Amino acid sequence: MTGPVRVAVVGGGISGLAAAHRLRALLGPDARITVLERRDRVGGVLHTVDLAGKPFDVGAEAFLARRPEVPALLAELGLPPAVHPTAASATVCAGGRTAPLPGGTLLGVPTSAARLDALLSGSGLAGVAAEPGIPLDWEPGSDAALGGLLRARFGDEIADRLADPLLGGVYAGRVDALGLRATIPALAAALDAGAPSLTAAADRATTPTGSAPGGPVFGAVPGGYRTLLDALAAAARADVRLGVTVRELVALDGGWRLVLGSTTEPEALDVDAVVLAVPAPAAAKLLAGVAPAAARAAGEIELASSVVVALAFRDADAATLPPTSGTLVAADEPLHVKGVTHSGTKWAHLAGDGVVRLRASLGRFGEAPALQVDDDELVARVRADLATLTGVTAAPVAVHVQRWGGGLPQYGVGHLDRVAAIEDGLPAGLAVAGAALHGVGVPACVATARAAAGRVAAGLTPPR
Image 1 (cartoon, one colour):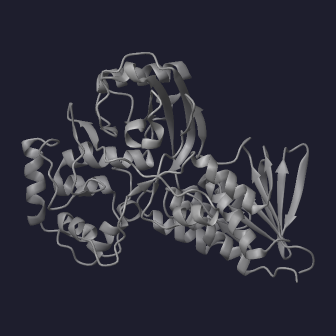
Image 2 (cartoon, one colour):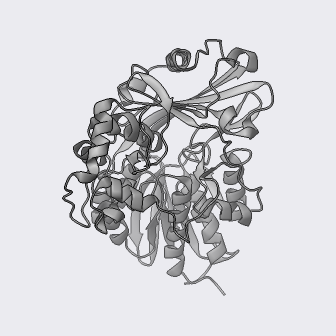
Image 3 (cartoon, one colour):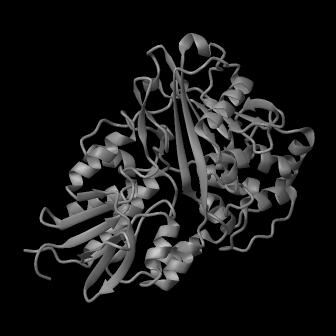
């Protein structure tokens, strides 16, 4: 190889920027790294806006703090450490009432310590109590729709009133369509190891070990995710090109050609390696001509759309707001929102200035048509639901509506097999990263980005 190493990263979200940052560390100062992003900004589904004078995230709100990737990245970039939630607890609106979110569950799957009296009916509680005694037929290594498994073992209420609201917040999906193995891998592992019931499997999956991490479960980036995104872009020292569409990927002898721009005025960018950090449908399109098996697998991953409506109120106008971190909403409740976060109660850094900030989420998988109304209508729906849930009826002093069309991949049954087909079907010099692979959270995206950068860097020889 002569001349500087050239690598293209397609996608300027957290996965793409983390990949570019890692590539710079692996390939050195002379490598030419180009980040191509079709939007007019970096960040993908991470976006920080100003809401009544404070930075406010209207994409992902928090990250799993017990994974090491984000805290390590903040330290590596010289950024302040993460902040963590207050002790305020959450509630769930289900069965026509709002109750404390039960403890003692694994993403809604009851352990033997779960206390569900405030949420379930008498028959629902009886179903939970009976589950450990029902014979379990589980084939190790198999997968199943989580909702169907919960309904068969516990009855409908656990699925509808607890697991679906919880997982709907993570995936914008429905519990009946999500695969157990990809969404709750610890539960699948406990079943594979011989747990005799789902309750026993949840017990095993949540039992602390000597190496189990402690400390807060969630974290947030001070100043919002834009602080992290800006620092990654600066440290990567990449040529970040915004508003650029990559239409085609072509294999060359010893490298790759990316066809950019319009069909009438195409541009060719030739590089030695490529990282694709784009949503699954876009990856499928680009891979079709160079890795057809991987493209087919990526094309099977569906996406859900959602909306975040952020609102700010004067303290006096939000006096009826409950002192909780927010409310999850079951799908069969007569409300539009699937959840409301009381951001200033949940995060101390978003409070203390006389303003109460909230964020409401709307949209589950298959509900995209319901979101196809104008912003004013979405805000009106949120305000109506907020009045029902909290009694807050005043007009907000600030509002931001953020639409995420196709923002979240759906981890259906067999998802891990699809991911293996994608990763195993890639030729040398090509790697993928992003939320469609091994987790939708920011830490998982960073992990896939670093792995993708390592894959392509291993096949390149930096200039001497």
